[in-house]
Length: 203
Image (tube, rainbow, N blue to C red):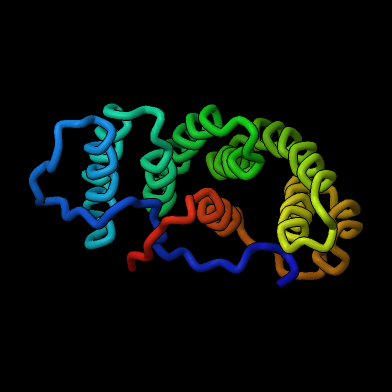
């Protein structure tokens, strides 16, 4: 596919270390403890998705200890999407957007979550805000760079989300002829792009 969505919703979580949920805290330092809790929640939900509410509580505990730490927010969005609680995922995404105000991917993710929650009007506002951010990124990149093509595809997809198929086709000829991914697929792929590089795969 020409656009950036090659979807498989594996649980690719943002983590720092593999901490088992039943392990005792190794520190009273709130910053380090927040990271332990984040990873414990990942392990718990990865082992059994019936523990979704427990994992969400642990992510919230990590956030309470270090509100500047973005990984629990990212992981919380993933769990909420998997549980199909799109309204709560949207709220978490809006908080993440405040932490990453220049991240167009967060804006588009938030917009998609608004739409999944039945609010198309607000969704379009987020998409329209993301478009100039993608355009600005492209203007500062070499058009031959791989990242240029990735951002160009995201811009084309964002135009697609607001129904501007003319712009989509201009940016990526042929994209409009491809099978359009569902909003849940788009949200999942955008979430994957938000993860820091130091990630692990949990199935």
